[in-house]
Amino acid sequence: MTRLRTIILVFLATLVSVGNVEAERIKDLANVRGVRSNQLVGYGIVIGLNGTGDSDKTTFTTQSVVAMLARNNVRVDMRGLKLRNVAAVMVTGDLPAFARTGNKIDVTVSSIGDAKSLVGGTLVVSPLRGHDGKVYAMAQGPLAVGGYTVGDGATGEVKNHPTVARISNGAIVEREVQVKLDHQKDVTLQLRDADFTTAARLAKVIDMNLGGKYATARDSGTISVRVPAAYAQRPVDFLALIERLEVTPDSLARVVVNERTGTIIMGQDVRISPVAIAHGNITVSVKTTEQAVPATPLTPGLGQVQANTELTVKEEKRNLIEVSGASLADVVEGLNRLGTSPRDLITILQAIKKAGALKAALEVM
Image (cartoon, rainbow, N blue to C red; front, side):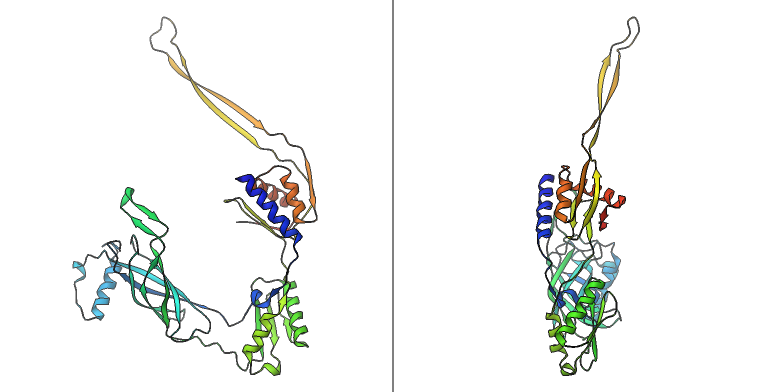
């Protein structure tokens, strides 16, 4: 399996090295400042559970049920309630830009008590608030859970995560976030991945297509674009024109490795200076055997058991191999001539970077 992953790495590296970097649309590289989603959060109660809700120890769940019943003119004594079909949850969602009153959004429901499962439950209407404390949406509806729990204790079985659920179109927008585009003299584009070269190229492409000096790269992630007089009353048409333009983005030479999974991802701009590598695996084997030793003649006793320890050290012999390359394929091919696994490649890449031969940023996840 390890060898297969190494072969796949070489194959992908070859594909990247021979392919050219293609231009991308501006809408895939940047966002318009001010056009963004907003996070919403709220507290709610899920009812209708089949004995898998919060236990009596979760007092805030009982208090919530009492308060809910009081709002419906039902008076109950909190001390007499024993609820196992109710669970306290937090409801989260994102309010998209330009969402209007009456639009529906998806919400995620997560248990905050000791409920075992939310399967079969229904969320009672819950207000969702923004960071300013105002209510922007109301959520309610049956839960869709992607897991289940069966049994109890050591004999039970749990699949996926039954204490988190989702309600598709489960919240109705009640308040709008105003985003004004009309009568703006300029718009600001924000690159998702800040880069000076990409920002300069983006500004140049916009100027070429608009036929004048309209765009200015303020920094590595911000481009200010002056709105032409012809589009002063048509901001949507202007932004639609801008986001369709294509730019060839630039990127930092980077190698990303994940030591937990043995995954290695390299960009096509990775370069390596000539370097000699010697890599060998050392195996230390400790073997313990027990041997019966008879008792000495004319002495009492039945004998003793003696433990013998044998230490074996094996080192795989390898020669120094010079690795250098002007492309990613050459680098990976040179490292694979050592017969290394992805995990070994991670160790080698870290050593090469330490020696100053790897001309790329090395990130370890």
